[in-house]
Image (cartoon, rainbow, N blue to C red):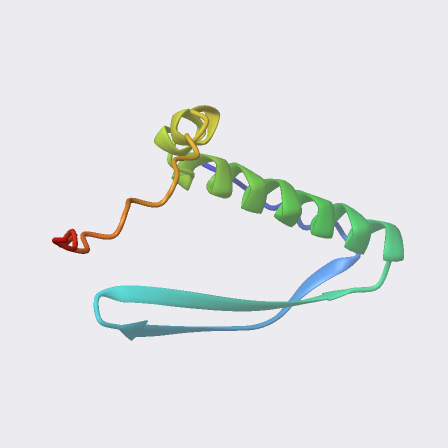
Length: 86
């Protein structure tokens, strides 16, 4: 579980929630007066996003990419051959 720390230079401006099709979205607006605290919050959010992406990536893809594909020539056309009789 991830958490976001709000320092004394941060204040909650507003929040809202919506639900569609069984999924809910929470939007939070925070006022930050110190640029350093803003940077720390953005870095924390980036780390949370990276952790969530790492959990959802399929691990089977790496195995498929490791196998080299063989280059085969195109199959011959199935044209009939009628030799000429002399």
